[in-house]
Image 1 (spheres, rainbow, N blue to C red):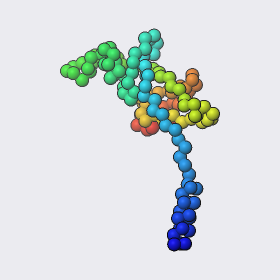
Image 2 (image 1 turned 90 degrees about the vertical axis):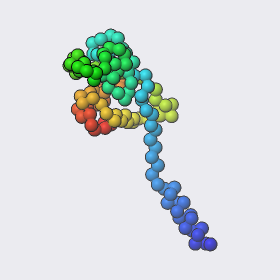
Image 3 (image 1 turned 180 degrees about the vertical axis):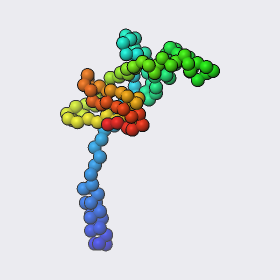
Image 4 (image 1 turned 120 degrees about the vertical axis):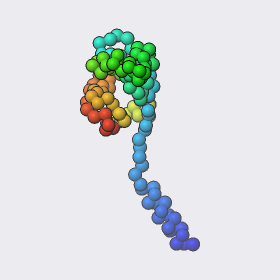
Length: 130
């Protein structure tokens, strides 16, 4: 019995000394808008998603995969597109000095700004960016 109590205390002590992951995760999928760079009109966007599906959802283009419509949407790749959202940081994090944003997939070439400061220049869509 005495050995069982000692083993229990030892296991409890070791478990309490383990590193605790103190991450707070907040997905930022809401309230996105997009526009062609230079335009003044913002349109609702779905994130995750892509500019083609956002243009279709806003009735700017027809389905490019229907018949021969692909040729009529080639102009999209020649333009630069801007996506924008706002989000609030949890009150519990206001005093933190470091934050990490993780992007699971950005367009091949993308610049990311937070509060008008450039925080990331992306050049690879297939690698998650922090």
